[in-house]
Image 1: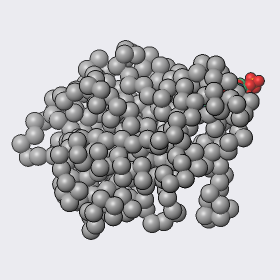
Image 2: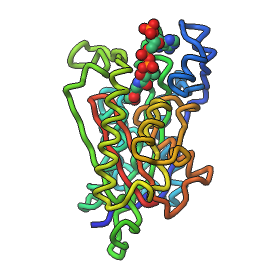
Image 3: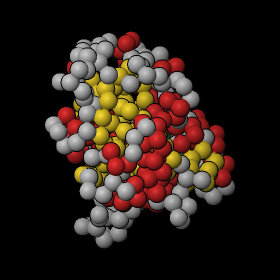
Length: 325
Ligand code: UT7
């Protein structure tokens, strides 16, 4: 069966930029350390009035515009986030109400940094099985709200933002095979054994607080390169292509060194990897659609290109999707 088509994209960032130098003025870190170890130069941080929902709504409006469709054409909203506006209801329902497509299916998925891959794969499956014709798939986060701003090992790494894409169900006359438009192959994984390497130390059912992000960065790094290389090879095999056929890799933006190491393992040229971690830092579920939107709007990713999306995050969760734009 052919896959859902990616019609358009949009993204949104908070208005406030925070540079490494600003952080270095508050905690024991330096621009040099952050750039050398992560590639991050700045991040966007939400102000009081900016929330996961408000960023998601702004990104979604741009994606609808780009796709040339009205909100009333949307049958399904899948929003990936680990920082919802409220514990419930789903942030997706806030987006739905703001856009005015009330009545359609709307829910959140929680897969942290891999959230966009989980949301994309879920939406693609639901569209293929008749839940509707068009979906908004969103990754949106305000990780600044769950950071321990005194923990230099984590607070310098993350930022806030949102990205969204419009997906349309496959058509009967779609070509079949690696030249077909749309989602060609996807794989998702999770392994709960590594919970303690990357988690939030709070929640409604345990502490009745929101909690703060905790991470053993070096361990996560090691798992990330192995898991991402494996899942990328699985998707390449499923789609019946070779790594050299890929025009662009749009990876989760956690660390420039992870992007380099993963591309090298697969034999993909670094120029084919979209990098926004320097500008956005790690925006968790938002990072893949944000990076995709940047590269589409600056003209690098074009219609007909073969694009690999990939991410790994807390859980652990990881996944990849190959899409012909
Ligand atoms: O999005 C989900 C997936 N997340 C990731 O993929 C993150 C993966 N991990 C990483 O990106 C990297 O492991 C980090 C960027 C988090 C850390 O880089 P690292 O090269 O693994 O550094 P490290 O944790 O081994 O720390 C090295 C040193 C330590 O000092 P000592 O013990 O060697 O004296 C840290 O205390 O760097 C120190 N350090 C810092 N120094 C200045 C840690 N954070 C900072 C900081 N500023 N912000």
